[in-house]
Length: 163
Image (cartoon, rainbow, N blue to C red):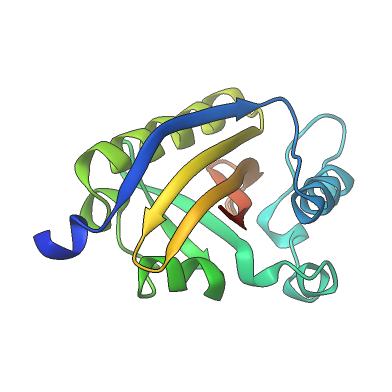
């Protein structure tokens, strides 16, 4: 669990904007990749997502896969190194409610649950400040089917733009 002094270094300004589609060039490439894996309007399976293909898109370090961890909470199952650097550590396997401030975890869980329920992609711009980074993050959450074929996980990426 993150300590209180570490949590106080997070700041997310009121800017939280939904986008109709990705804007960042690599976000567009990642979305096109996800679309190419979707069939008959159904989300792709986790087994359709390949690290070597993400590396070829030059965005593997900014990709993630999240899974439900119970009680409406979510956790990273796979977390790119660039994203981990902004958390100051690898938070894979730690529920959002245990490594984010309460209000951020609530928002992240709400958005994740929305995508899982609707099976529709979500694209956001967020003004983010923490430690040595200040800027806009464009992030996306895209539904995928877990290996069991029943559970919805989310696949996506976060793309950092300096202010």
